[in-house]
Amino acid sequence: MTATVTDKQYRLLIGGEWVEGAGGTYDVVNPATEEVVAPAPEATKDDVYAAAAAAKAAFPAWSHTPPEERARLLQSLAAKLRERTADLLPLVIAETGATLSVGSQLQVPQAAARFERYARGAMENIDVPFQPSLMPATPLAPGALMNAAAYRQPAGVVGCITSYNFPLTNMAGKVAPALATGNTIVMKPAPQDPLAILEFAALCEEVGFPKGVVNVVTGSKPEVGAAMVDCPDVDMISFTGSTAVGVRIYEAGAKTMKRLLMELGGKGACLVFDDADVDAAVTALVSVWGFHSGQICTAPTRAIVQRAVYDQVVEKLAAAAPHLKVGDPTQADTVVGPLISDAQRARVEQYITLGKEEGGEIVVDGTRPASLDKGYYVGPTLLAGCRNDMTPVREEIFGPVIAVVPFDTEEEGIAVANDSEYGLYDYVYSRDTSRAFRVAKELRCGHVGVNTAQRHHEAPFGGFKMSGVGRDGGDFGLYAYTELQSIIWPA
Image 1: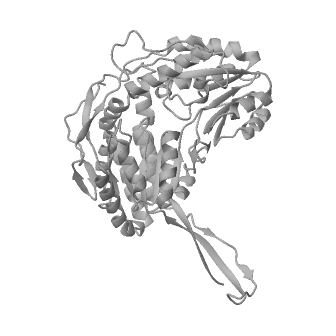
Image 2: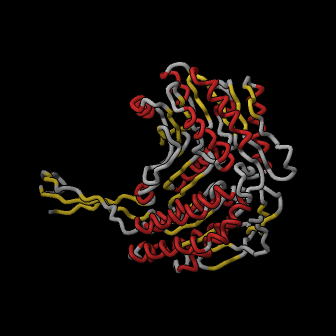
Image 3: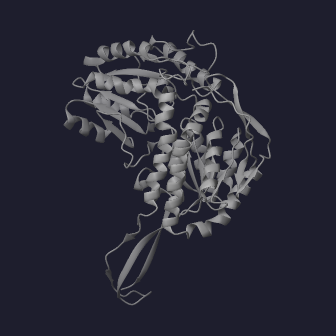
């Protein structure tokens, strides 16, 4: 597979029309080659407001569309994504720098799987019936036996704002349940890699979604996302991205009482106890390096290791690093691809420098691999001998960097893991499953993997503390994009 460079002219989709961005265009850059993949349209506030108005106008008809028809369109979209995988995959790899392995398994196919899941979800009855209740007479009404049900109504117009690491998969996780439950949408992909989302919008049009149900705006400037949050026609914001941006959305959304679903930053703690399967724990930790170069919020970037096995874990991690090929993401044997941008590379390198300055030991230094003269690469990096007050231990790096912190007792390990502003995804490794589950329940985070780094896609996903607000995944995704409405009547 070769890197994609295209002369295609991309446009915004607003109300069923493909239009130029009022702000012109900006270049989307391949992080592996530093070449321009294609120009993307630069939207303005007016474009965003026009897209939201189109979605609002389409909402009444779409929200009353029979579930069978919504399911049919979602299933058709899944099939179309699978049909177009060979075209979309090179584009996604060129935009994101994802390796062939990550791209072929988790970019396009996972997006299709999410639409298949919510095609089924569109047919689910998620209303909540109640048992009749005998109510005494009050000054407002005579006594009666009362019936009630809580109906789930679509939230309205949903602004879907996604991060750069998994553009199609993350967007599918928002768009699919939102459309399944009768919402209309405005998509705003990350500025670094919007092209596959523009292609995806064209597929929505191709399979027959009505005009205005699906809209997309793109842009390189913060003003585009800010306009969506400010727009009174947008009822809900579903955001995946950094905690810093999430805080600004939370504050700005209050002005129009936006419904919010926010999956924000993470600083995953991987507690490795002295009775753990060390090889299994090390395999999970190595995923920080090999899974999209650590650009994933669920990564176990803090290895919190009981002292009896501390040296063993550090040695095994150090031994694994040289076997992870860093380089061209289009090559099948590449494990670690580039970071998304030069700015992100500089940010990651600064954290590595801070780790050394604050007392850590750089056991494996992956900064600027000498063999690569182009691309925004940082190789696997291991910081050992860390303390929990060190900057690279406390802040989300979003790169291939593991920081190892030793602990002595179970209580100390739990305290170190919980001493973080984040609470998205932690891990516990111990052969004593009773202890592992006990510890898991003590961790202040939304998701805990016990002796595994595998996921369960029906489980609710989201974070505690500064890692977000709300939950999606499985049926919880259907709940997230609906409002509860209680209707009460005499039996």
